[in-house]
Length: 294
Image 1: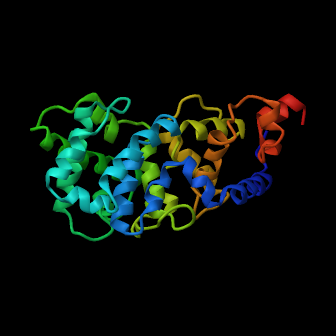
Image 2: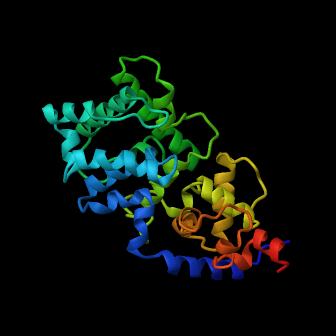
């Protein structure tokens, strides 16, 4: 059955109006960079937050909160300074899922060295996506960015092979995965509309792959946008192209709001009366329609 784009657009707008409020930022990793005013701090904190944005929200926040508290009022400045405080910071880093304590220490040592080598002005990392290219092209540009960090991490390790945890953290450049976390980072840096920051001027919102986290994967299936069971880079571009039909200039507009349906409303892609009956998307949801005959 073809999707009624006009109806879907209407329901997505209702969802946006519901969640376009500061009170909902605490349910998302973007809550961390939102605490800073300096663009350098925001970009660095955004980069760290997005790389570790896998797992449930509670786990992500419990790992990241002590890190940013330890880095103080200016994480950028704290990371650039090579003193005893930084060494103390490294010693207090914890394990996070696939990253060992040593992995995290290597990452932050690498980040510090890279930041010290860059111009002290915003944006810090945009050029690393498009260096040597005339323009941003999603798949090759994200891979280029991953290769840059892969090489920098290897330098910190004394040119040794990266551990699984470090390779997972930055992602494999050659992999055909959705590259969700770096797509999310780009969304934050490129889009100028709420809740994002819009620091990058050479990359446009309609060039970024859709960040296909587990919540989005569920929702695009039950909304009839796709029936795919697995998601890779190809799907990230296809979903972006679908949303361009609704908003050609800003196809990632509804990413933040759709993920609230999974995170806050606890949508499990199956009919649960207490959840489904009050959902703003029920009129365009295949699960609701099948369960209720609508």
